[in-house]
Amino acid sequence: KAGVTQTPRYLIKTRGQQVTLSCSPISGHRSVSWYQQTPGQGLQFLFEYFSETQRNKGNFPGRFSGRQFSNSRSEMNVSTLELGDSALYLCASSLAWTGSSYNEQFFGPGTRLTVL
Amino acid sequence: DAKTTQPPSMDCAEGRAANLPCNHSTISGNEYVYWYRQIHSQGPQYIIHGLKNNETNEMASLIITEDRKSSTLILPHATLRDTAVYYCIVHGAGNMLTFGGGTRLMVKP
Image 1 (cartoon, one colour):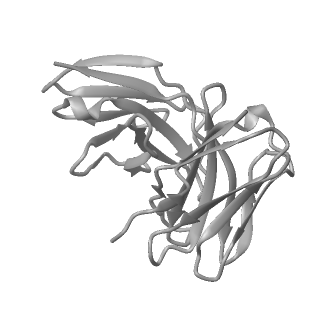
Image 2: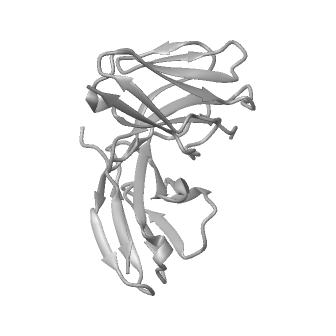
């Protein structure tokens, strides 16, 4: 079974630009979560999508947004990029949360975004 | 989610058992203990999870104290490829994980 794929793997942008990152979950997984990883703040949860709806959101400004398509693929968008947005952006997919047991989250390799 | 405390770094000799501690004194009754690891420049990888019983899988063992206020992840025979940052996470419902600083495990030959 193919793992979580993220594109692109590396990206360089300049301040003020916007960027769109893509994530394809494992086949059959309907939940997609996004995380930001920086040396200073570590791994931080951005948001989770399930059945095309945002189910949870972390403490990030509105410049960070996402969406999920009917095939469960997800995109996240960052507008008006700032230097501090330079980070590794990780996507994780899992089966739907049932409320009674834990579903392992499978992480992709990440997209490394550099903002100049 | 309950807060976790882990030592920032640990060393282990190759072939020996690596015992990684985690304190989670404010854990509540419905929260699980999860362990993930992140090898350099890769996405985190799930290792194991437990509620109150000890658990074992092909990768590791998880020992949770009876009061559930702490746990230990055991890698029985550490290899160089186990060098990574190990995250202990306490979490209840949903897929939103809160990662702390983790323990940087260095396995040395």
